[in-house]
Length: 290
Image (spheres, rainbow, N blue to C red):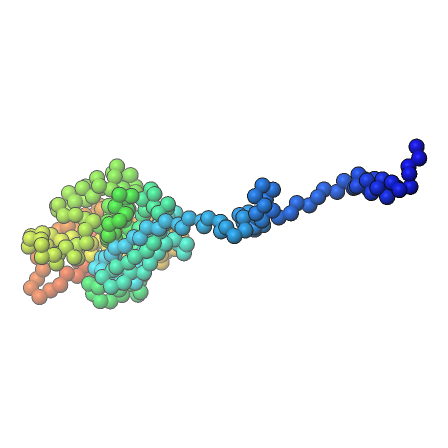
C-alpha cells in the first residue's frame, strides 16, 4: 500500500509512541489517591506529625532507712534479686532522717519489689551516734504491689522478716512477722518507723516505750550483721547474697537473748551500747573487731 506523502509525519509519530522501552515509570512522592506527598522518614503525610511514643509510666518510691536513721546509705530496687545494688538499678542515697526517694518504671513494679539499703563502713552515718558506722551491712524489705504508694521503712527488723519469707520459713511476710513478734514478746508493728513512733505524742507512754525497745533490738541486730558481714568480706570468696544475709540465721536463733538484753533496765546515767552488750553477752558466732 502506498501512503500519501502528506500523512508520513503522522504515521512516524504514532510508531514512536507505540515503541517505548519497558523501563517502569518511577512513582512520584504523591499518594495515588489523595495526591498528598509522604514523608519518606516517618511514612506520615507531609505536614502531619506522627503520633509520639507513649511516655514511660513511673512510680515514685520513698521512705526512710534506719538502725538509727542512716545518712549516705545506698538504697536501691533490687530488680534482679542479686542482693546487691547494681549500677543500672533505680537507686538513691539516703539523707537526713534516713530519707530517700527514687523513681522506678511501673511495669517493673508489677510483681512487687525488694528494696535494699547498703550501709558502708566509714561512709554511712548512724544518727544515733552521729558517727560513721564501723562495719557495713545490708538491710532489706519486700514491697507488695498494694503497698507501693506507702512510705517504705527499711530496717534490721524488716530485714529479718524479708529473710524468713525469702527462705521459705513462712508462707508470707505477714506470717514471718507474726512469728518474730512472738519471739520478741511484742504486738508492735515491726515494719513501722520505730524512731518516729517512740516520739509520737498520740501514743501512750507504754506504746512509746515499746518502740524504744524495738529500736534497741534493731541496733543489736544491725551490730551483729555488720560484724558477720565484715568477717566474710575479709575472708573473701563469698557471694553478694552470702555476705548480705550473713548472720541473719544466727540472729533469728538468738532473738530470745536479744529481746532480754534490749529490755534490760539501764543503769542511771548510762546509755544503750549494742557493742558492749554483744561483747559481754551470750552471742554465738559473733566476734567483735579489734
